[in-house]
Length: 171
Image (tube, rainbow, N blue to C red):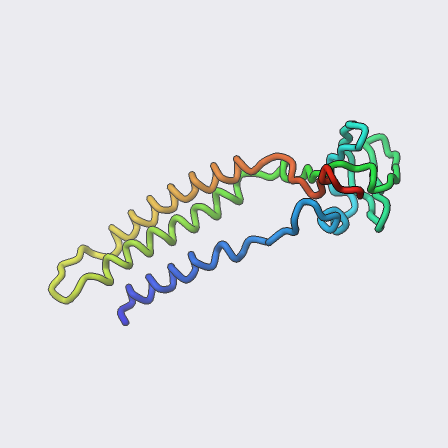
């Protein structure tokens, strides 16, 4: 197997494994996503009265949720009063991580394309020097990947629903 074929197989293996690196979160209707929050995590809650409060998570029990407020006060309320709990942490997330991940994936994809082209070249093929086309392909792929990563990361900003009571749910 040629070095170019090995590079192509390696790049495709890395690219195919990326989706499995993302954490699989439980469904938004479960209190489990709220119960595991770290104390001090910013959240936004909506109560059955329609009142919306920005606060911080303190603790969760089987029946109650304790919240902290900017004025230093704390309040413990029964979980049955909550319609929605959303995490506000993703609002402050920079676009840098999506841009960087996109650049890496794009650069690897560019390298995989150029490696595939060289792997298809047999002994009679007069391929150009590996450095120039490979560098160009990696740069273009990395730039395109960075742009896509930035756009995807930017589109995912906002509140992440951690719990939402279903209309027919008693609790």
